[in-house]
Image 1 (cartoon, one colour):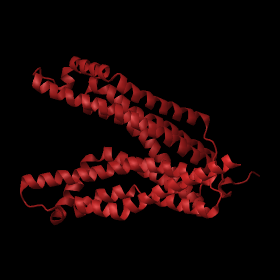
Image 2 (cartoon, helix red, strand yellow):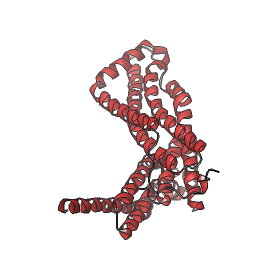
Image 3 (spheres, rainbow over the protein chains, first blue to last red):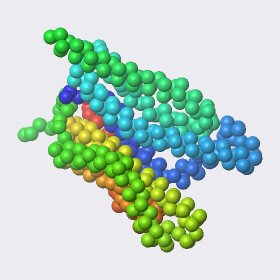
Image 4 (cartoon, each protein chain N blue to C red):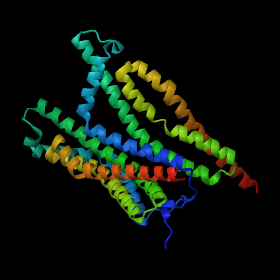
Length: 172
Length: 183
């Protein structure tokens, strides 16, 4: 199998490394993360709509901290998985795509898509700064949707290349 | 004089990782599959075993003999017991693939034979040992409780094996980045 360009290998390896490191930090630093989350929520009280009512504010704090932990958890799982997808799909593209322009376009889409898990990290931290709903909107609009679309387009493109090869082989 | 491989261009094809690493990865994936199937097939037997073992160690779990209180404690421990098995299943499948992919990158792009061997070794041992921590945690819960079981798993599996994998991954990142810079 042919090796894809080093930049794609680097994206894959960095994402897997980040995924593993974030998993370790999540389990080692659950208390520090919770304390940091509570401090940031307090510092951004208007964004979270804190009212001064203990019961209501506690519910918001718990919900926002959960959103941050969920963002980290999604980042951990997606980064490991997407890193492998970048490695294997780009290897497939390198090995079966003979048309240079198509190969470059697919590499670009896969590299962009490989950064998609970062959206969950942004979501986790933006939830503390901007509030949960604003964080979801930010991450979905600017990171998860465009970068995720890149990965979808890259995977569909690779599938199309394989399908074309199959048809050509059947005709030959 | 032998050529300095660090200045050679990166190979354009992948090199097959050592068979030992591949064997470990495939066995790990197979164990994960078996673990998943066993969780479904023996779900009731496993829960019964865990429950009866916990009842034989009441002090460890803080059981007081009051049914309402004890049932809540046992239920929580059983949920964690089941979570440990599920996390083993998930992580073993994932880490099996991570071992295959990352050792392939390591043997292809790491120029120094010593670095290559150490990275492959760390990735293989770390990747295989880390998921076993979840299995160990599950097995330890009935005997040592949730928190003590977690501490033991952290000390003997997650810390050393997870640490080995993380060190190897960042080392490999540096190797690939250095290759790009030298190009």
